[in-house]
Length: 233
Ligand code: GRF
Image (cartoon, rainbow, N blue to C red; front, side, top):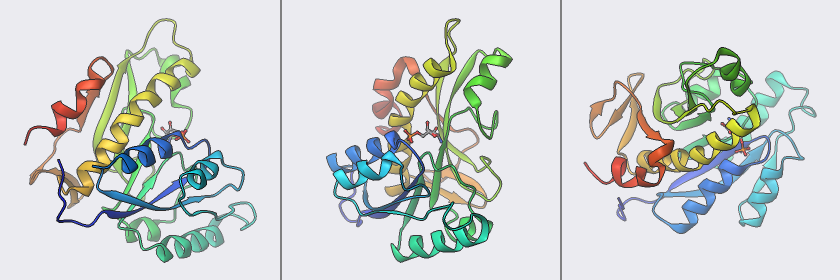
């Protein structure tokens, strides 16, 4: 799925912490085929390890410090300024733990993605692993979706799905889910960058048709996911 006639999308990744999703995106972008250039990484915390990862990859990394900004409106304005200055075609939230002001989300609507560790619409918000275990759900996973102002509610592009095991702890589940995120997030980005997937009228469209349910990658066939979901048109 290459399209050399299009310039790669200028992509900015917003982070708050470890940055393992950032790493997966950067690695796959460098390997080629994603159709993006990561032109900047912005963190709301100066100590985020994700910043080190970005610098090690030669990507400009900067902090808009939520605390130093006193949070709220001032943070939103500064972040918006830094983001706009990078002129992104695509913004990927990857473990970014702040809620963005609605005007900023609207400015990038259809061009802003997030990964959330649950099978949305189940479990928006924090602490999804513990909540899933407490409820005794059979399935858990992660969702890549377009961002809209309402938290964790934008239309879903792709989900990673796994069966919860009897001996799963929140930490074990997190590890399993994140392995899947490293597959589905780059995949969603690739679909968007190659215009196979787009946001239109509040919905996700794939190859010109509105999607009624997200694409699904199961833990058991994670390694065939590319061929299965991207190879055919
Ligand atoms: C990811 O697992 C994602 O689901 C959630 O935050 C986590 C961030 O991890 N939104 P990392 O910073 O990418 O390692």
